[in-house]
Image: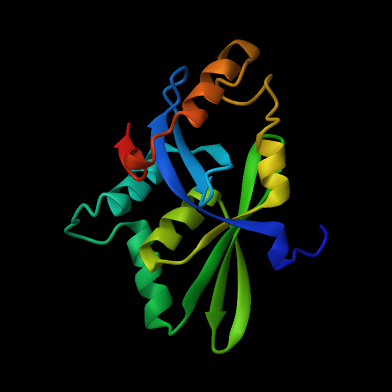
Length: 172
């Protein structure tokens, strides 16, 4: 893989979490600040719940997995600097969590859903590589969940009509 440069990434935020209208699989929608790009990432129900709990500031009596990870990172004196969604291969998204520990930069491979859940808890920025944005616009319609030709128009309409007032609302 080629070296990534900071200019290769676009800062994003969680635009929405919703259920895929065809498969009922959770989808997280990442949006850039200029609202030029919407990146749908199909995720698991547990990860969707973890993200939604944080977005909605739902109090939990005991730490969830991502809270535990945040607490351990903090107790070790490390920090989460940022999260990068770095690639999209065969309809699978890849991410890296950037951590500083004892003055050393560490990159931790992660699923985007887990990286995003951690970034929300640590208030760390989320970035998406430009190639991921480009590739996400051309998801393989034969194997992407519900992204068949007949559903492509429906998804384009959903992504184009996301209301900024709904960002962060859990729609499952």
